[in-house]
Length: 274
Length: 310
Image 1 (tube, one colour):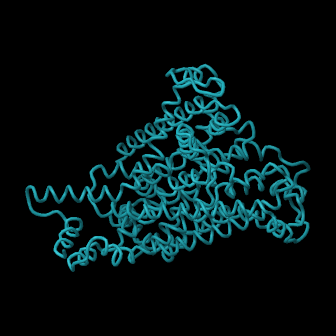
Image 2 (cartoon, each protein chain N blue to C red):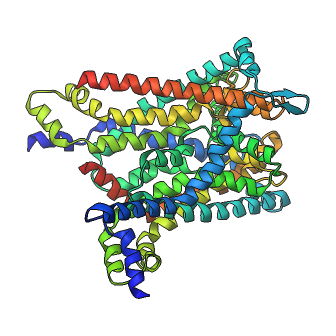
Image 3 (cartoon, chains in turn orange, cyan):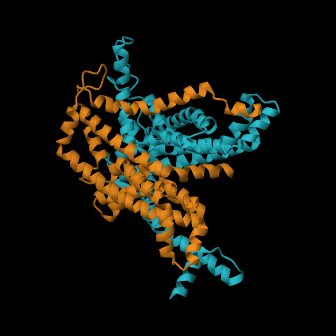
């Protein structure tokens, strides 16, 4: 018993460390909403007073709405394509013996690791050689590439998490592959699909570096913010915009992770057994 | 009709059984079905990654002439890289800065991963979600937040001045290499924790009990059991931070100033203001090659060390 207790014993130092870690992780970001309600165009202490004027001003700005709509369009399209392809890819990776599976998966997961600037300039070079003008479509292509690994990584635990004999039973009972997918596989992996849609939408909505190289005259929201960063007097309204975006992103990601938590927990537990 | 349905479904879903040609056929068709499901993803990765990268490699052997390209293949850009020290200096600085950020992140995140793996017994998922949440949200805005914190009249400086601890703002906070390193470490922390957590979680707890029973104290137990067994997680975390941060553009652009500029900024300039795309392509290729070399050497060395330990 005593041999077990030292592991179970709470470690005061580590607890304090964990608390500080979380605070440091979140506090820098929390300064954005704090100063967005500050009644001064200077971002500094002491706070001078409470105001919502920066939010009101934002509401009346035409370019912000246009950029927002661009980002939503790109984000929705990206999340649908990435998740659609991701479902097939995750099924292929978990269900079939594919020759050269390891290298193939590694290749697909590359965008998680390789600096975004490399993909951005490489795609830019290809598009310019083909004479394709930059637009929201080219941004969408870039975002699909960035989002696919996230989608697949979210979906794989879902496919691993349920018994494949259920699919076999459906096939044995006379359903063809397509109906088996719709009536058995799809409902089982649905939480993963929802999570993938939410997560890839957020990643696309917040993505900057691909948009930086691949967008034409229509800016996405992060591109618009980037453009405004040059003007110190625009700081408060950027703070307001950033606060809204961060709150929405946090909520979307939290819901996405929460829907998919049992699958994730299962993979982490499975890792335990290996 | 229905018979056909059953066989077509079976060929894909049942495990290959039997011998000879039948199993060969089933196996092949299983592989074929797998590949066909994977093909949309592979296609977009080939169009969006492999082909562009190939063209980037080719372009790095071109040269810029006025507003066009001289498409005869030369090593001029690579020669240029060797001759002008500014390029090499920026590359080395980038590698050093992301190296520093990587070491800082791994050292700071390891105890946190350890804490969640060994000391949290209920609601682990909440902790994991809480830690990884910021990673999914806007990188640009998280970097921007650090600009607000470290700025000349930012949170730290104005707070210290209000408290009367300093008279004039600390200038070294913003537009410096340390600002970039701090921000990179903070921005990638969420990403670093996961692989370390997974490998710590995998450790068989009975090994720790055995070590204690055989007389190891907590410190020895950590260095002889926990740390070596969690090394794979530490290695993948290091690579997962080092590789992408070396080519980072946003952080040095917003917080680096002239002292903290990195190779990513120079690559962007080649495609923007300087308008020498072939040189930009060359710099991208050199960046990729140096990252790959360092990653391989790192993996080789850590593998060697691991074998020596065990």
